[in-house]
Length: 96
Ligand SMILES: [Zn+2]
Image (cartoon, rainbow, N blue to C red; front, side, top):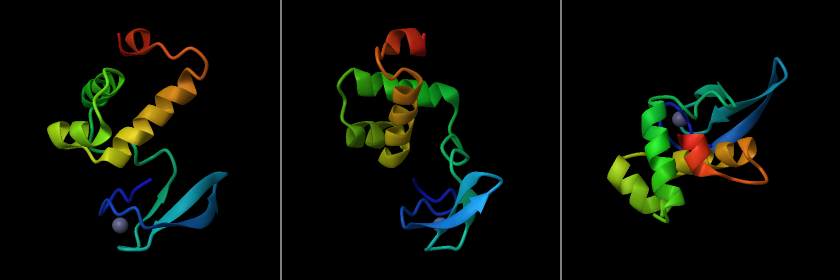
């Protein structure tokens, strides 16, 4: 979880909005909702490339360096993929 504005991970919960968890960045005051910020600024292609590198054994920080994606963003993607395929994670199938 990081701020879509300043990428700070200093985030506080800020109540619920329309049934979704609302968050507020402590650093810059930006408010945002869970699930909204993860894809912001990154294409599906870039996400898939990062996930492929991850399942091929590259470390998060190495991917972060090569792709210039914050490592917490990659962790969020990995978690989302894990949620989609909780039991038999088949990255080739998912990533085409
Ligand atoms: Zn912020």
